[in-house]
Image 1 (cartoon, one colour):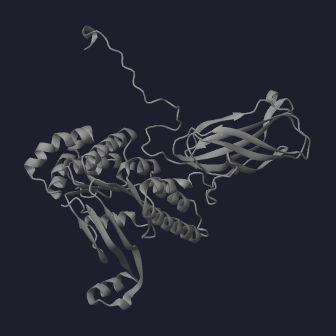
Image 2 (tube, rainbow, N blue to C red):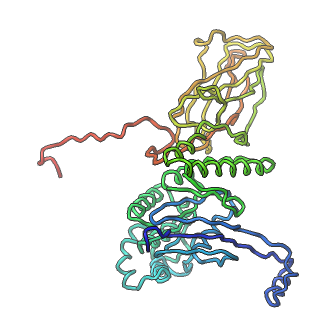
Length: 453
């Protein structure tokens, strides 16, 4: 294969399904080729074209039902395209639907030989690899039990271990890595990095923004079977988030804007050198997405105060809800007092999408110029902070506390008042939720040889 020949070439690929009025009409249609029995035609993939170079890692992203899995099945030959062409150069290994290619009544060990044969390995070749497969899968005694007894995580462990054992030229993965536990996912990502370094071409579907940005050289965005755009992962994931947060009414307009922006970036990339193109794609970092609004807001009963008009601004004063790690921001909200309140404190709290409390603050009455407020008073409360969060979606809660009859209560409280996303960092090494600013430095202390084991 020439160095200029892509490992994967997809040309004008289409996949359409005929939807029949009834099973009987389907039978007649297949028997006689009668198109009159077709009620409608559903297009799962529409005129999709792209190439993947040898050694490149490409992520395919999009909403559920956009055609990602269908596209991978067309590329691997499981499905036959309605039109278009797929060309592959090299040995292909794929992990698609959970449990695909497994005999549920056979044991895990037996399925290693079954799958190995499907992938083109001889019995001797499988024997040479089986120890490594068993070690990587790490499913213990379940190896010799029927796979129909396996959990989804065990399926993925075994499937991934078999798929990488053949040392493929092309590895295709359909969202399988999201099923395993954290330790196994980390082991898989390490192996993927090694495959990438060794020149393996990798194409995979993922909903994980961090995974796509960290692993991929490029990303492709699909929506309703169409390729919306392709480009640098960070840029494409930003567009993907805009689609995710758009409601049905605003989605057509959002898609038009995204297509226009993608065309603009494409033109700039061809008019400028790579450095200029990279800068243009990063220009969307301080960004406000009007469709990114919380759908889970809970407003508690008011006891003399009402919270509203929440905003998040960057240092330039622009409202944003797409944040960058390490940058400074100000979260503010308005409080309207409907009756006199004393010893008032204001609070805010950041929570993850899973409801875990990350951090926040409740003001101290001693630091306020005034902690007593008369009815009719309206104030704006501001909380400057530095974003030290890793890539994900977060929610902001707000509260007003006051002393009533000798007891501190919430005069008003709103959960999930505001939401924001933190942009991923390319080649990120930070794990967890918070960046503690740990420096990547290694300190080595040498000891006498007799103390070393």
